[in-house]
Amino acid sequence: MPHRTFFVFIFPSILAMVLFITLPIVSVVVQSLFVQHEAVLITVENCDPFGCSEQTRIDTEAMAKLEAEQPLGQFAGFANYLNRNHLAVDEIGAIFADNQGLGDIVSQIFNLPFYKALSFTLVYCFLVTPLAMALGFAIALAVNTLPALLKGPTIFVSILPMIITPLVGSLILAWMFNPSGILGATLQSLTGDPTLSLRASPALTWIVLLVYGVWTNGPFSFVVFYAGLQTVPQDTVESAKIDGASRWEVIRHVIIPHLAPLATFVALVQLMDNFRVFEPIVGFSAEANATSLSWLVFNDLVGQDAQLFGSAAATSVITIVGVLILLAPVLRRTWREFNQKAV
Amino acid sequence: MSVATRRPAALNALILAFLAIWVIAAAFPFAWTVWGSFKVEADFFSRQSWWMAIEGTRTQAQTGSAFTLAGYEGAWVQNEFWKAAINTLIVTVSVTLISLTIGTLGGYALARSGYRYAFWILIAALIFRAMPHITLVSGYMLPFFQLNIWGVLPTTIIVLVAINQPFTLWMLHSFFLSIPKDLDESAMVDGCTRFQAFRMVIIPVMWPGVITTGLFSFLLGYNDFAVTSMLLAQENQTMVPKIASFLGSIQNEGNVMFAVAAVVSATVPLFILVLFFQRQIVSGLTAGAVKG
Image (tube, rainbow over all chains, first blue to last red):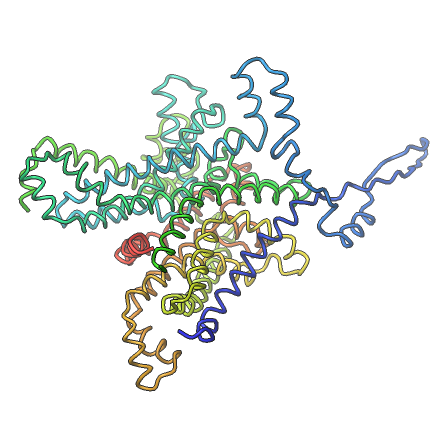
């Protein structure tokens, strides 16, 4: 296709992506170097019949003027990245200088908002992805043995947790895990602990969030693996059996190698999606016990008093770096494949 | 099939038991919430026993019948959930149509160009696809405030279209690759321009791919929370952010049931979608997986 035609065809797409993906990334990087203006305070003297008192308040007029002149706030360099709410360099140094052993270091670091979010994000990402893939693979194998009549309805039900709006799905489960909901109440009576609840137990919060993750991500692996199973060469399966392979050995040595490329693809997509885990934190109101990087950004943006654009942007940039690290192996492989093709 | 007949009964039972557990795990939360949405709060969140939610003891006592529409009335009429539903309709339909229009053009160009830059665009799209939406949102907010275009539906629609583009491009690109080049080339030999060949020869055979991609664009627009909750003013909210705002305001007043009813209402369209388009959704995921 000639260059000119190509660019005419692709122009709207490129324009949309440059305007609303590339520019925002640039904007995030710029914003991350600024902090919001400090409040301009003025002192006024209030006099009433009982005497005069001095009162300090925020000068809204001066603030508005300042914001109009410099909407980004004041330049702060890398201060946003290094402060307590992000990489917390000073605090980490202090923790290492003064602590009571390894456990203490870990728990102190975990109390810093950024590391708390990072640890949950990584745990969620690297536990949910393999578990959901294993679940999906098991469902795919099982559904594949069903008679045709039952396959349709089973597939229908199986893709519901995936298709559901993440916020809605997490709310539905959160209500069931509520202490007065069906699962929450059952858990309390099973463990004999009447105070057990998501709010009170960080461990339970983490487990329930991971369960939600596997529940909602499993179906994607299922669908992809199920489709992959339809393309397993039957001759290979038959000849393996003739050679005396057991059912398990067929799965292990024929089916799994056949599905391996699909599994790489699924793992990649799922890692990318799970790294931005966000809605479940809101849906389960889990922020006291578990937060994620995306949630930190969200929290800064819906700030109670003022929106902390600089802080949100710094977290965003760190998150983007995280995504790029996750993507690096794929990008390298694609690059190598492309070069081989070109040669 | 011979393989199926030789499976021992114990293994069969195991497989069926596993599937039964999974089907319950997948479907029960929905069934339970739909059932519970017709009860009062004291039943659905019963402190005594979950059996009350099934029998509707309190619902009977409070409303005189085992089922009540109070939750739905509170959400749809009192809290104007219908406005949010209309906004969702506008947003998702526009996002789907615009995404598909510019996506088919772009995907077609990518599939037919052998040059190096086409590859780079696809790689860039892959990276963009991985960007967490909320990090992009934090880039939009300040410029949108400055330009005074924050809070309205068109801005959100355009943003969602853009966020959707990387995925749409990849998917349509792989669908177009499966259509033989000879088709458009012979049309062009017969005197069509490139665009005529695209519109009159390629698109008619592309409908299955376009519909499948459209479904996923629809889902992305419908399921989004990060973008819609941050970029829409309160009066323009779509269903998902509206549900989230219910949680903040309503939970205090003891009207969680409004939120439950709203959640069930927002789930119904998705059910219908899966019911009618199950095959396309499955094939779409597979196509993306096998080729992308």
